[in-house]
Length: 438
Image (tube, rainbow, N blue to C red; front, side):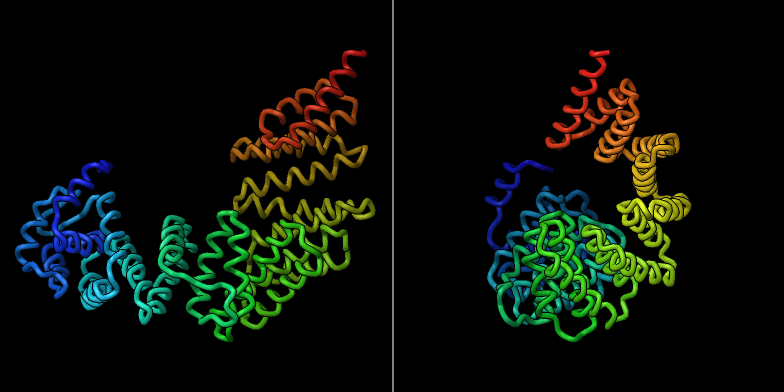
Protein backbone atom coordinates (compact mmCIF):
# COMPACT_ATOMS: atom_id res chain seq x y z
CA UNK A 1 0.00 0.00 0.00
CA UNK A 2 1.83 3.08 -1.28
CA UNK A 3 -0.95 5.65 -1.62
CA UNK A 4 -0.02 8.88 0.15
CA UNK A 5 -3.58 10.08 -0.35
CA UNK A 6 -4.99 7.04 1.43
CA UNK A 7 -2.72 7.60 4.43
CA UNK A 8 -3.67 11.29 4.59
CA UNK A 9 -7.38 10.42 4.52
CA UNK A 10 -6.82 7.78 7.17
CA UNK A 11 -5.10 10.26 9.49
CA UNK A 12 -7.92 12.76 8.97
CA UNK A 13 -10.52 10.15 9.91
CA UNK A 14 -8.87 9.18 13.22
CA UNK A 15 -9.18 11.01 16.52
CA UNK A 16 -6.17 11.71 18.76
CA UNK A 17 -6.56 8.51 20.79
CA UNK A 18 -6.93 6.37 17.69
CA UNK A 19 -3.82 7.88 16.07
CA UNK A 20 -1.84 7.25 19.26
CA UNK A 21 -3.22 3.71 19.54
CA UNK A 22 -2.22 2.82 15.98
CA UNK A 23 1.21 4.40 16.60
CA UNK A 24 1.72 2.21 19.68
CA UNK A 25 0.63 -0.91 17.81
CA UNK A 26 3.10 -0.06 15.04
CA UNK A 27 6.15 -0.64 17.25
CA UNK A 28 6.11 -4.46 17.02
CA UNK A 29 5.95 -5.55 13.37
CA UNK A 30 3.86 -8.56 14.48
CA UNK A 31 0.89 -8.66 16.87
CA UNK A 32 -1.82 -10.97 18.09
CA UNK A 33 -5.02 -10.09 19.97
CA UNK A 34 -3.58 -10.50 23.46
CA UNK A 35 -0.49 -8.39 22.69
CA UNK A 36 -2.60 -5.70 21.01
CA UNK A 37 -4.94 -5.48 24.03
CA UNK A 38 -2.01 -5.25 26.44
CA UNK A 39 -0.41 -2.41 24.47
CA UNK A 40 -3.64 -0.41 24.51
CA UNK A 41 -3.93 -0.47 28.32
CA UNK A 42 -2.29 2.90 28.87
CA UNK A 43 -3.48 5.83 30.98
CA UNK A 44 -2.53 8.21 28.18
CA UNK A 45 -5.40 6.80 26.11
CA UNK A 46 -8.71 8.32 27.22
CA UNK A 47 -10.85 5.88 25.23
CA UNK A 48 -11.58 2.46 26.66
CA UNK A 49 -9.40 -0.42 25.65
CA UNK A 50 -12.29 -2.38 24.18
CA UNK A 51 -13.60 0.54 22.14
CA UNK A 52 -10.19 1.22 20.61
CA UNK A 53 -9.54 -2.44 20.04
CA UNK A 54 -12.83 -2.92 18.17
CA UNK A 55 -12.33 0.15 15.99
CA UNK A 56 -8.69 -0.56 15.12
CA UNK A 57 -9.52 -4.13 14.11
CA UNK A 58 -11.72 -2.72 11.35
CA UNK A 59 -9.24 -0.20 9.90
CA UNK A 60 -7.98 -1.08 6.37
CA UNK A 61 -4.37 -0.86 7.52
CA UNK A 62 -3.52 -4.51 8.01
CA UNK A 63 -1.59 -6.68 5.60
CA UNK A 64 -2.96 -9.57 7.62
CA UNK A 65 -5.25 -9.56 10.68
CA UNK A 66 -6.55 -12.59 12.51
CA UNK A 67 -6.56 -13.71 16.11
CA UNK A 68 -3.01 -14.99 15.78
CA UNK A 69 -1.54 -12.59 13.28
CA UNK A 70 -1.76 -8.82 13.03
CA UNK A 71 0.70 -7.38 10.49
CA UNK A 72 0.39 -3.71 9.58
CA UNK A 73 1.16 -2.38 6.10
CA UNK A 74 4.75 -1.05 5.98
CA UNK A 75 3.96 2.39 4.54
CA UNK A 76 1.31 3.04 7.18
CA UNK A 77 3.49 1.66 9.94
CA UNK A 78 6.34 4.04 9.07
CA UNK A 79 4.01 7.05 9.14
CA UNK A 80 2.64 6.19 12.58
CA UNK A 81 6.05 5.31 14.03
CA UNK A 82 7.17 8.83 13.12
CA UNK A 83 4.08 10.22 14.83
CA UNK A 84 4.84 8.25 17.99
CA UNK A 85 8.41 9.53 18.09
CA UNK A 86 7.16 13.07 17.57
CA UNK A 87 4.97 12.95 20.70
CA UNK A 88 5.75 14.51 24.06
CA UNK A 89 8.30 12.87 26.33
CA UNK A 90 5.62 11.82 28.83
CA UNK A 91 3.70 9.91 26.16
CA UNK A 92 6.86 8.24 24.85
CA UNK A 93 7.81 7.35 28.41
CA UNK A 94 4.44 5.66 29.01
CA UNK A 95 4.67 3.70 25.77
CA UNK A 96 8.29 2.74 26.46
CA UNK A 97 7.44 1.48 29.95
CA UNK A 98 4.52 -0.60 28.67
CA UNK A 99 6.66 -2.15 25.95
CA UNK A 100 9.46 -2.88 28.43
CA UNK A 101 6.99 -4.52 30.82
CA UNK A 102 5.61 -6.60 28.01
CA UNK A 103 8.98 -7.48 26.45
CA UNK A 104 9.17 -11.03 27.95
CA UNK A 105 5.82 -11.91 26.32
CA UNK A 106 6.95 -10.45 23.00
CA UNK A 107 10.17 -12.49 23.11
CA UNK A 108 8.03 -15.62 23.28
CA UNK A 109 5.65 -14.46 20.54
CA UNK A 110 7.93 -12.97 17.87
CA UNK A 111 10.31 -14.66 15.47
CA UNK A 112 13.92 -13.49 15.17
CA UNK A 113 13.31 -10.90 12.44
CA UNK A 114 10.26 -9.47 14.18
CA UNK A 115 12.06 -9.38 17.52
CA UNK A 116 14.99 -7.51 15.97
CA UNK A 117 12.58 -4.99 14.49
CA UNK A 118 10.87 -4.55 17.88
CA UNK A 119 14.23 -3.95 19.60
CA UNK A 120 15.16 -1.35 16.98
CA UNK A 121 11.92 0.55 17.58
CA UNK A 122 12.12 0.39 21.37
CA UNK A 123 15.73 1.64 21.15
CA UNK A 124 14.52 4.42 18.88
CA UNK A 125 11.95 5.46 21.50
CA UNK A 126 14.62 5.46 24.22
CA UNK A 127 16.57 8.23 22.46
CA UNK A 128 13.83 10.68 23.48
CA UNK A 129 14.20 9.68 27.16
CA UNK A 130 17.46 10.94 28.73
CA UNK A 131 17.51 8.29 31.47
CA UNK A 132 16.94 5.51 28.92
CA UNK A 133 19.36 6.66 26.21
CA UNK A 134 22.28 4.58 27.45
CA UNK A 135 20.22 1.36 27.49
CA UNK A 136 18.83 2.11 24.05
CA UNK A 137 22.25 2.82 22.53
CA UNK A 138 23.66 -0.38 24.04
CA UNK A 139 20.79 -2.31 22.48
CA UNK A 140 21.42 -0.55 19.16
CA UNK A 141 25.09 -1.57 19.43
CA UNK A 142 24.21 -5.24 19.96
CA UNK A 143 22.01 -5.14 16.86
CA UNK A 144 24.66 -3.19 14.93
CA UNK A 145 27.41 -5.72 15.72
CA UNK A 146 25.19 -8.60 14.61
CA UNK A 147 24.23 -6.79 11.40
CA UNK A 148 27.89 -6.09 10.57
CA UNK A 149 28.92 -9.68 11.29
CA UNK A 150 26.24 -11.07 8.99
CA UNK A 151 26.34 -8.13 6.54
CA UNK A 152 22.70 -7.12 7.13
CA UNK A 153 23.24 -3.60 5.83
CA UNK A 154 19.58 -2.53 6.07
CA UNK A 155 19.80 -2.82 9.88
CA UNK A 156 22.98 -0.71 10.03
CA UNK A 157 21.30 1.90 7.85
CA UNK A 158 18.21 2.06 10.10
CA UNK A 159 20.33 2.42 13.24
CA UNK A 160 22.34 5.21 11.62
CA UNK A 161 19.15 7.02 10.56
CA UNK A 162 17.53 6.77 14.00
CA UNK A 163 20.71 7.91 15.79
CA UNK A 164 21.05 10.79 13.35
CA UNK A 165 17.41 11.88 13.83
CA UNK A 166 16.99 11.19 17.54
CA UNK A 167 20.31 12.03 19.17
CA UNK A 168 21.90 15.47 19.16
CA UNK A 169 25.60 15.34 20.06
CA UNK A 170 28.20 18.08 20.37
CA UNK A 171 31.13 16.22 18.82
CA UNK A 172 33.50 19.02 19.87
CA UNK A 173 32.77 18.61 23.59
CA UNK A 174 35.90 17.92 25.65
CA UNK A 175 34.28 15.02 27.48
CA UNK A 176 31.64 12.64 26.18
CA UNK A 177 30.15 9.68 28.10
CA UNK A 178 31.07 6.24 26.81
CA UNK A 179 27.57 5.48 25.53
CA UNK A 180 27.65 8.62 23.38
CA UNK A 181 31.02 7.54 21.98
CA UNK A 182 29.35 4.20 21.27
CA UNK A 183 26.70 5.99 19.19
CA UNK A 184 29.35 8.06 17.39
CA UNK A 185 31.26 4.89 16.54
CA UNK A 186 28.21 3.35 14.85
CA UNK A 187 27.50 6.55 12.94
CA UNK A 188 31.14 6.98 11.93
CA UNK A 189 31.56 3.42 10.70
CA UNK A 190 28.35 3.62 8.69
CA UNK A 191 29.52 6.89 7.11
CA UNK A 192 32.92 5.35 6.29
CA UNK A 193 31.34 2.30 4.65
CA UNK A 194 29.23 4.69 2.56
CA UNK A 195 32.42 6.62 1.62
CA UNK A 196 31.21 9.75 3.38
CA UNK A 197 34.73 10.42 4.61
CA UNK A 198 34.30 13.91 6.09
CA UNK A 199 31.31 12.71 8.08
CA UNK A 200 33.22 9.63 9.22
CA UNK A 201 36.10 11.82 10.46
CA UNK A 202 33.64 14.04 12.34
CA UNK A 203 32.18 11.10 14.27
CA UNK A 204 35.23 8.85 14.66
CA UNK A 205 37.70 11.49 15.86
CA UNK A 206 36.04 11.82 19.32
CA UNK A 207 35.89 8.00 19.55
CA UNK A 208 39.67 7.93 19.13
CA UNK A 209 40.60 10.97 21.18
CA UNK A 210 38.07 10.75 24.04
CA UNK A 211 38.01 7.01 24.73
CA UNK A 212 37.98 5.67 28.28
CA UNK A 213 39.71 2.55 29.58
CA UNK A 214 36.83 0.10 29.12
CA UNK A 215 37.51 -2.74 26.69
CA UNK A 216 34.73 -1.69 24.29
CA UNK A 217 35.86 1.94 24.24
CA UNK A 218 39.48 0.93 23.65
CA UNK A 219 38.53 -1.50 20.88
CA UNK A 220 36.45 1.18 19.19
CA UNK A 221 39.32 3.67 19.53
CA UNK A 222 41.69 1.16 17.92
CA UNK A 223 39.33 0.75 14.98
CA UNK A 224 38.59 4.49 14.76
CA UNK A 225 42.27 5.53 14.68
CA UNK A 226 42.94 2.93 11.97
CA UNK A 227 40.00 4.17 9.87
CA UNK A 228 41.06 7.79 10.38
CA UNK A 229 44.55 6.90 9.13
CA UNK A 230 43.02 5.27 6.04
CA UNK A 231 40.88 8.35 5.35
CA UNK A 232 43.84 10.67 5.83
CA UNK A 233 45.79 8.52 3.36
CA UNK A 234 43.02 8.96 0.77
CA UNK A 235 43.00 12.70 1.45
CA UNK A 236 46.82 12.93 1.07
CA UNK A 237 47.45 14.16 4.61
CA UNK A 238 51.03 14.53 5.80
CA UNK A 239 52.93 11.29 6.36
CA UNK A 240 53.49 12.07 10.06
CA UNK A 241 49.77 12.53 10.75
CA UNK A 242 48.79 9.29 9.04
CA UNK A 243 51.55 7.39 10.82
CA UNK A 244 50.45 8.85 14.17
CA UNK A 245 46.94 7.46 13.63
CA UNK A 246 48.25 4.01 12.67
CA UNK A 247 50.75 3.98 15.56
CA UNK A 248 47.94 4.83 17.98
CA UNK A 249 45.79 2.03 16.57
CA UNK A 250 48.68 -0.44 16.94
CA UNK A 251 49.30 0.58 20.54
CA UNK A 252 45.62 0.26 21.49
CA UNK A 253 45.12 -3.03 19.67
CA UNK A 254 48.16 -4.52 21.39
CA UNK A 255 46.71 -3.38 24.73
CA UNK A 256 43.33 -5.05 24.16
CA UNK A 257 44.74 -8.13 22.42
CA UNK A 258 42.92 -7.53 19.12
CA UNK A 259 45.24 -9.60 16.92
CA UNK A 260 43.07 -9.61 13.78
CA UNK A 261 42.67 -5.84 13.97
CA UNK A 262 46.37 -5.42 14.75
CA UNK A 263 47.27 -7.37 11.60
CA UNK A 264 45.06 -5.02 9.58
CA UNK A 265 46.72 -1.90 11.00
CA UNK A 266 50.23 -3.25 10.42
CA UNK A 267 49.17 -3.98 6.84
CA UNK A 268 47.93 -0.40 6.42
CA UNK A 269 51.18 0.93 7.92
CA UNK A 270 53.08 -1.21 5.42
CA UNK A 271 51.03 0.32 2.60
CA UNK A 272 51.91 3.79 3.90
CA UNK A 273 55.63 3.01 3.90
CA UNK A 274 55.36 1.30 0.51
CA UNK A 275 53.73 4.38 -1.03
CA UNK A 276 56.87 6.31 0.03
CA UNK A 277 59.18 3.52 -1.25
CA UNK A 278 60.49 2.99 2.29
CA UNK A 279 61.53 -0.60 1.65
CA UNK A 280 62.89 -1.79 5.04
CA UNK A 281 60.08 -0.16 7.04
CA UNK A 282 57.35 -1.45 4.73
CA UNK A 283 58.77 -4.98 4.69
CA UNK A 284 58.91 -4.98 8.51
CA UNK A 285 55.28 -3.81 8.86
CA UNK A 286 54.02 -6.34 6.31
CA UNK A 287 55.88 -9.15 8.04
CA UNK A 288 54.33 -8.17 11.39
CA UNK A 289 50.92 -8.37 9.73
CA UNK A 290 51.80 -11.68 8.10
CA UNK A 291 52.89 -13.26 11.40
CA UNK A 292 49.58 -12.35 13.04
CA UNK A 293 47.50 -13.57 10.09
CA UNK A 294 49.36 -16.88 10.08
CA UNK A 295 48.96 -17.19 13.84
CA UNK A 296 45.20 -16.69 13.54
CA UNK A 297 44.84 -18.78 10.36
CA UNK A 298 43.48 -15.76 8.50
CA UNK A 299 44.22 -17.08 5.01
CA UNK A 300 42.61 -14.16 3.19
CA UNK A 301 44.80 -11.79 5.23
CA UNK A 302 47.89 -13.87 4.38
CA UNK A 303 47.05 -13.64 0.67
CA UNK A 304 46.54 -9.88 0.87
CA UNK A 305 49.88 -9.32 2.63
CA UNK A 306 51.76 -11.39 0.03
CA UNK A 307 50.04 -9.31 -2.68
CA UNK A 308 51.15 -6.12 -0.94
CA UNK A 309 54.71 -7.43 -0.50
CA UNK A 310 54.71 -8.15 -4.23
CA UNK A 311 53.62 -4.57 -4.91
CA UNK A 312 56.38 -3.29 -2.62
CA UNK A 313 59.18 -5.29 -4.23
CA UNK A 314 57.91 -4.57 -7.75
CA UNK A 315 58.97 -0.93 -7.24
CA UNK A 316 62.64 -1.98 -7.16
CA UNK A 317 64.21 -3.77 -10.15
CA UNK A 318 66.71 -5.51 -7.87
CA UNK A 319 63.80 -7.20 -6.07
CA UNK A 320 61.63 -8.28 -9.00
CA UNK A 321 62.27 -11.92 -8.08
CA UNK A 322 60.91 -11.34 -4.56
CA UNK A 323 57.88 -9.58 -6.02
CA UNK A 324 57.10 -12.53 -8.28
CA UNK A 325 57.51 -15.04 -5.44
CA UNK A 326 55.10 -13.12 -3.20
CA UNK A 327 52.47 -12.75 -5.92
CA UNK A 328 52.67 -16.48 -6.60
CA UNK A 329 52.32 -17.27 -2.87
CA UNK A 330 49.05 -15.35 -2.87
CA UNK A 331 47.52 -17.17 -5.86
CA UNK A 332 46.85 -20.68 -4.41
CA UNK A 333 45.34 -19.17 -1.25
CA UNK A 334 42.91 -17.03 -3.23
CA UNK A 335 42.01 -20.01 -5.42
CA UNK A 336 41.15 -22.07 -2.35
CA UNK A 337 39.09 -19.34 -0.61
CA UNK A 338 37.80 -18.80 -3.39
CA UNK A 339 38.21 -15.06 -3.97
CA UNK A 340 37.97 -14.48 -7.71
CA UNK A 341 38.20 -10.70 -7.53
CA UNK A 342 41.26 -10.86 -5.27
CA UNK A 343 42.77 -13.43 -7.63
CA UNK A 344 42.05 -11.21 -10.64
CA UNK A 345 43.88 -8.35 -8.91
CA UNK A 346 46.94 -10.49 -8.14
CA UNK A 347 47.07 -11.76 -11.74
CA UNK A 348 46.95 -8.13 -12.88
CA UNK A 349 49.76 -7.08 -10.53
CA UNK A 350 51.91 -10.06 -11.56
CA UNK A 351 51.30 -9.29 -15.24
CA UNK A 352 52.34 -5.65 -14.71
CA UNK A 353 55.55 -6.85 -13.05
CA UNK A 354 56.43 -9.32 -15.82
CA UNK A 355 55.63 -6.69 -18.46
CA UNK A 356 58.63 -4.72 -17.14
CA UNK A 357 60.98 -7.63 -17.95
CA UNK A 358 61.75 -7.88 -21.72
CA UNK A 359 61.92 -11.68 -21.93
CA UNK A 360 58.72 -12.24 -19.88
CA UNK A 361 56.13 -10.70 -22.22
CA UNK A 362 54.56 -14.09 -23.00
CA UNK A 363 54.17 -14.84 -19.28
CA UNK A 364 52.75 -11.35 -18.72
CA UNK A 365 50.19 -11.92 -21.50
CA UNK A 366 49.04 -15.15 -19.84
CA UNK A 367 48.39 -13.40 -16.52
CA UNK A 368 46.67 -10.43 -18.20
CA UNK A 369 44.36 -12.93 -19.93
CA UNK A 370 43.67 -14.72 -16.64
CA UNK A 371 42.86 -11.40 -14.96
CA UNK A 372 40.53 -10.36 -17.78
CA UNK A 373 38.70 -13.70 -17.68
CA UNK A 374 38.07 -13.42 -13.93
CA UNK A 375 37.25 -9.72 -14.25
CA UNK A 376 34.41 -10.57 -16.63
CA UNK A 377 33.20 -13.29 -14.27
CA UNK A 378 32.96 -10.94 -11.28
CA UNK A 379 31.78 -8.02 -13.43
CA UNK A 380 34.06 -5.27 -12.07
CA UNK A 381 34.24 -2.72 -14.90
CA UNK A 382 36.90 -0.57 -13.24
CA UNK A 383 39.21 -3.58 -12.98
CA UNK A 384 38.63 -4.54 -16.62
CA UNK A 385 39.36 -1.01 -17.79
CA UNK A 386 42.73 -1.02 -16.00
CA UNK A 387 43.78 -4.51 -17.15
CA UNK A 388 42.88 -3.90 -20.78
CA UNK A 389 44.76 -0.59 -20.67
CA UNK A 390 47.95 -2.02 -19.16
CA UNK A 391 47.84 -5.05 -21.44
CA UNK A 392 47.45 -2.71 -24.40
CA UNK A 393 50.37 -0.55 -23.27
CA UNK A 394 52.59 -3.65 -23.04
CA UNK A 395 51.60 -4.72 -26.57
CA UNK A 396 52.24 -1.18 -27.78
CA UNK A 397 55.76 -1.20 -26.28
CA UNK A 398 56.30 -4.57 -27.98
CA UNK A 399 55.33 -2.94 -31.32
CA UNK A 400 52.24 -5.15 -31.61
CA UNK A 401 50.07 -2.20 -32.64
CA UNK A 402 46.94 -3.98 -33.98
CA UNK A 403 46.58 -5.99 -30.75
CA UNK A 404 47.33 -2.89 -28.66
CA UNK A 405 44.62 -0.95 -30.52
CA UNK A 406 42.07 -3.70 -29.88
CA UNK A 407 42.90 -3.89 -26.16
CA UNK A 408 42.90 -0.12 -25.61
CA UNK A 409 39.57 0.21 -27.44
CA UNK A 410 38.12 -2.41 -25.08
CA UNK A 411 39.56 -0.50 -22.11
CA UNK A 412 37.81 2.65 -23.25
CA UNK A 413 34.46 0.81 -23.24
CA UNK A 414 34.81 0.07 -19.51
CA UNK A 415 36.59 3.22 -18.30
CA UNK A 416 34.40 5.92 -16.71
CA UNK A 417 37.00 8.30 -15.28
CA UNK A 418 37.74 11.24 -17.56
CA UNK A 419 41.50 11.47 -16.95
CA UNK A 420 41.98 7.79 -17.81
CA UNK A 421 39.73 8.11 -20.86
CA UNK A 422 41.88 10.99 -22.10
CA UNK A 423 45.05 8.93 -21.57
CA UNK A 424 43.61 5.91 -23.39
CA UNK A 425 42.28 8.06 -26.24
CA UNK A 426 45.71 9.66 -26.67
CA UNK A 427 47.34 6.22 -26.88
CA UNK A 428 44.77 5.07 -29.44
CA UNK A 429 45.42 8.18 -31.57
CA UNK A 430 49.17 7.55 -31.38
CA UNK A 431 48.73 3.93 -32.52
CA UNK A 432 46.45 4.95 -35.40
CA UNK A 433 49.00 7.53 -36.54
CA UNK A 434 51.75 4.89 -36.46
CA UNK A 435 49.63 2.36 -38.37
CA UNK A 436 48.69 4.97 -41.02
CA UNK A 437 52.37 5.68 -41.64
CA UNK A 438 53.00 2.02 -42.34
